[in-house]
Image 1 (cartoon, helix red, strand yellow):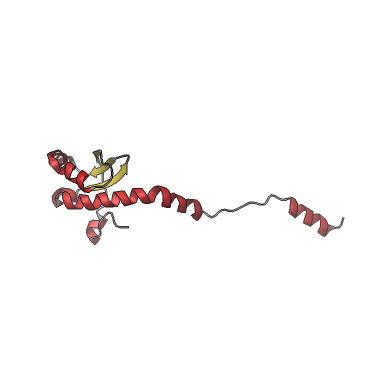
Image 2 (cartoon, helix red, strand yellow):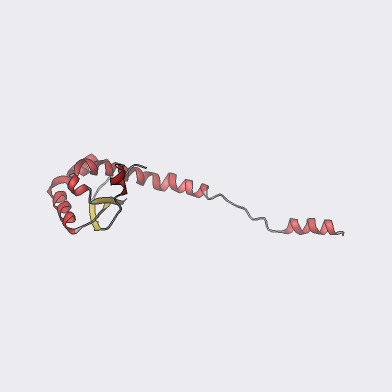
Length: 127
């Protein structure tokens, strides 16, 4: 065998690595898993902006919605107490009536978030 034939045989026996673009699995993840959750959280954010008074709303951020539990970050203890009082006073029922999905509980957690959206005037739930 000459050198060209050996090179051809060697190239044919090499493992052919298959490259899969990252966009395919990410597209599936976004379409099937995240799209529904983002839609639900967006609708909850709209209701949140309508129902919660502005003095308390500016100190909160909707963090997540999973299995009927809405997690809300509150930046200070005093605003957390005010929000808890509002929720037990009947606003929780108003949110549940407006929201079409299952909303079993609103969990308040301490947290810090940036107020960039307040400076630009954009709403937190707009993508």
